[in-house]
Image (cartoon, rainbow, N blue to C red; front, side, top):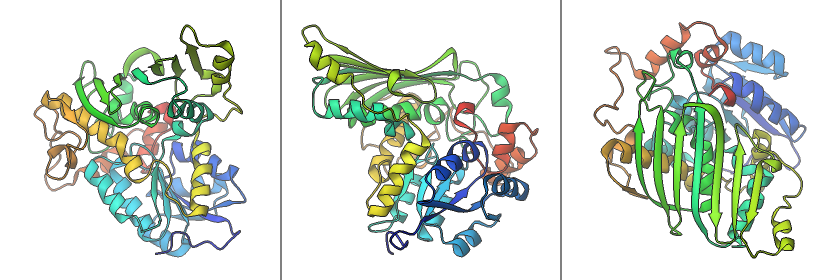
Length: 410
């Protein structure tokens, strides 16, 4: 299969799967910003009203409630997947099989087995499926990544990764939240994944993890807080905290190197001003000033990642956050869950086919496995049924139509 079927100079044809808040508020504006190089030609949703409204409001010409028909008739070059993680594997594989490259919302999918199936469905030379990890693509992360890669700041030694947010009982009253089969995990998977992915992107490969998790407040299947100690291949050590129990909400990464400390403090996205570099004693001011020069400000955003992905499609090269590069954060999360639920240290590469935590993130661990569903009703169908019957609040409407909710709502 050809890696890209567009003729030279012709706009890339894009389609959107799932038309909830994240599609409306983040992806469609990003796609529009790249016109005329990208043309959004179609959208799919299980709800006819939702997809018609999305297309009418967004100027998208073709609305579909049949995914296979959309892929066959519109032959998109790029498909953006904005549905809950339980549907990511099936929809991503379908798009790849139709010859489209994919940008899939996080969390990538509910298990490493699902991710490996997506990776196996990628073509030789494309098309490829990338995960939405937009924090990698801001100018601040790029600048710090270069400094760390060049060892300008010395060796990274100690790091801290913090996603401490707050979600109340009303948030978890929505039927699909707090469940392994529909949300994919608790704050470790659904909230902290962005900061952990950025930490790994800056620090490099990890080697082992020791973790704890708890349900301290909410009546859910998943955890509502987790903590972990991580050792990197470089020898550096890090702490990770993921919480939905924290009234003073913050997202933070701190990396202490031999010659400087780097800090990022924000909530749902950052700009250059959210980064701080503190030099060690003895570092010349001229050198420290150069470290603090981040250049033109490109905030972390879906647009920043999409712009890079479009360039990768044009060049026929594997995009960042796809394949092995996209798997690394999900592998750390699976290892964190395994460590927390089995009270063991888990090493990188340990979780493979045959390991219960490869097939599911809860690993069927006692006290953490999902609650039983109605006999004869698949978990995903039961979730969709309960979502469709839910009260029509904005986040619930997004879930019921098969779409993810806005980043600020998750």
